[in-house]
Amino acid sequence: MRASVGSAGDGAVAGQSTGVRRPPLTRETGKDPRVDSHGVAIDAPNQARLTAILNAGVELFLEQGFNRTTTDDVAARAGVTKRTLYRYVGSKQALLFAVCSQLPRRLEEVADTVSRQGATDQFRELIAHAAEAMLDLRQVVLVYLAEGKHLAPEQREFLVRHEDAFVARISETLQRGVDDRELRPCDIDVVAQALFGSLAHSTRWYRPDGPLEPGAFAGLMSDLWVNGLLGMGPYPGLGDDPSERAAPEVVGTLDPDESNEAQEKILDVATQIFAEQGFDATSTRSLAEAAQITKGSLHYYVDRKENLLLQIHLRVMAASLRAMDDVRQQDLQPGAAVAEIIRLHLQNVENYHNAIIVFNEESKALGPENMDKLVGWRSLYARFLEDAIAQALAEEGVELPQQQVRIVTRMLLAMLNSAYRWFGRGDDVPLQAVSEELVTLFLHGVRSATGTAPAAAAR
Figure 1 (cartoon, rainbow, N blue to C red):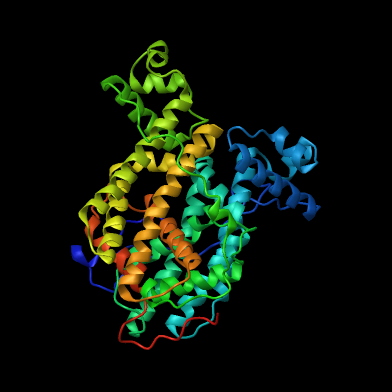
Figure 2: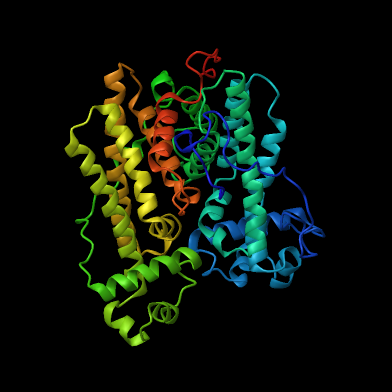
């Protein structure tokens, strides 16, 4: 999801893709003779042992991150010797690649099995099957999102190319629907990137032990993006999520420390390096060198590296909650308020791009107390958005169960939180046009107002 996107607002034709077509999925041979192009051992004599190694890698990368995980840790967790581990995956980085490459393999299967039928049905099937695949590989997706920066350049390029190929499949289905007048004219690239982001980043909030079964999740996801929020009907059988009543409350006040010019420079440098290399891979020495100060001067301004990480998170949350307050103070109509929240969220992606990378990918390095505060502030932001969405539904006379409103709020947040992966990287992409496209997608989906769209999937 690295291609530039265009919009009808900057010279693109509505309904026509403005980006470069992605290449089809290929199975080129990897450079390491121990593994195939997906990072999996070719000569693995025992599939169960390979699975145990991959599962151990997933668990440890999620628990403590790539840099804090050693091959000794993986071997012990998998119940194998280090010699066996190296025979199967070659190195810790090869293990990370093998873990992450399970996702493009599954998405390739999804793309190959979607039936050739009407564009709307095909789109619905593509989104639903991809959603179920993401949940089935939920832990793998979480590793990919958080630890992918630690892959070798050629490994990252391989995975990005295959990810882009699936996004291209979404684009092709959308284009076919627009051409057949089943789906509304839209900026194909923006919508396809945003949809993939919602699919992938929804793994961050979905809980396998929660009340939402994978099939129901997939059905709701496809219904939302086909028909839009205002075109949805009640989805029965969702039940209530008791954990929601125990959601963490905001702890303390959101008040980033006041800082002088030197501290701001250090924070800016840390934000860039953490975004590029990761928190654990960044030493205080490298921070001092990048800030052009001595290590002693760095410790004068910053007592612990984790405090820099916390300040970056506070910077993002403060900007997010200021934006929410701005919307509330404007006293907008409910639908306009939702639209403005989406626009301001994307504006923060532009303004705090590196900080938002750190916010999304490095939070596991925060201590328990700081993480509790972060979860509380995130929950507060989500509740504000949920309330705005509920008011927009009431304004339109649409009645949906509270649990369904909560779920679609999270799906929208997943889309917005994933935007840093494709939007705000300095490309000449108009913020207003992209935000308007996403507002229309969320409220009205992709179906054409005049075309014949099949009814929502059976509930």
